[in-house]
Amino acid sequence: MNQSGRWIRMFKSMHFRVLILLLLIGLVPVFLMKRGILNGFEEQTVSMRASMIRNQCSRLNADIIDAGYLTDGTSDVAVDKELTQIADLYSGRVILVNSLFKIIRDTYKLDEGKTVIARELIETFQGKDTDYYNAENDFIEVVCPITEDTTKNVVGAFIVSIPTTDIILARRNLSRSVLIMQVILVLLIIVVSFYFSRLLVRPFGKVTAMMNSGGTDFLTDDISMPDYTETELLSEAYNQMRHRLQAQEESRQMFVSNVSHELKTPMTSMKVLSDSLIQQAQVGEVPNELYQEFMVDIGEEIDRENKIITDLLNLVKMDRHSPDIHIEETNINDLIGLIIKRLRPIAAKRGIEIALESYKPIIAQVDQTKFTLAISNLVENGIKYNQENGWVHISLNVDNTYFFVKVQDSGIGIPEEDQGQIFERFYRVDKSHSREIGGTGLGLAITRQAVLMHHGAIRVYSREGEGTTFTVRIPLRYSEQEQAEI
Image (cartoon, rainbow, N blue to C red; front, side):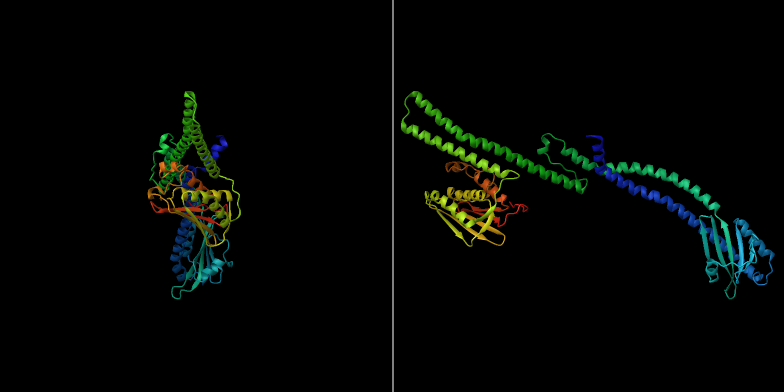
């Protein structure tokens, strides 16, 4: 495998995808955590600083009102001192504004006597405490109302502006600490993710290893992996597949063995007959009657061999993944009538009556050759495995989707334990009796395959000693997309 193929295989692996998922689950919160911690610290610090300023302004409120600081135009030394202390404490600026928005006191001595109007100031005169944090210019501005003790009317306001340099420095120090913690967490998450990703996919690796173990265990031992529901289901699916493969392998071996035996038997008979003729000729002249008898026997064995080979070829043709099928509109009544006409002389030799019962005319899309082969095998079996002077009844029926062919006989019947196997190749219920009447053991296998090729279904109902009924159901319209029903 080339380098690109290995990379593609790695990217498609469950281990890689589980690892990426765990890393995302672990790392995304870590990176978001830094922003959350820093923003939370900054917001909380600014809020605490603003709250402290409002508390200090609130303590000055009564002194300013009592001294008439905002009304008589005179300053109070004690108040001025406290204002200056607040400004020095925070290295900022304190402005005192009266109800006319006139600056009464400015710790910077820059704007006293001027008028100032701002949205925050107007909201404060409406009874609200407002503050504004400007992160770009690094300062906090807090506006607090000055109220009268009795009427609670707002008669002035504090405007306190302080720098946030110390908050910025503290934020940077905290950022470095958080970064160190992030690095440690990232390394820990990577290690933990690698460990747990391998741990999570390990059962699947065990299942794969068991499947790839090779040897004879492949068809003899089940696997069990109950770690997860998925691996348990995978194990069950594998075991079911193994059982099917095992059954197919046994069927294949049996089929090969049966084919070898079936083909070898007529050859052995012909060999014995020919050797007997040769020995007779070496001893003396072979009588004409004996010669004729042996040649008739050899001819019958040749016919039997030819029948087996023909049936095998028919079965192989229908077993292909893309078998040749020639669908055409066919009058089913007429076609089955021809089949019965051809087989009636064979039935007459044993006094067996063949009757056809048809309820409606049927026109369907079938392969005439394969359909004829299927129905002929059913009727022939009804004749072969019947009693002397028995009967075979064929009935036809149809609905909007399917047509039905039922073949009933008064024969020897099929034991219940054998009914599930009669469609297998070379399977015979009574091998000795079958050989007497010339069966190859392939007829029903060919019939079943022909019915399935038409996306139909075949069923058997039988009682030993009471006869057998085969029911065939085939769609009126052939469709390659339909699924066959067994």
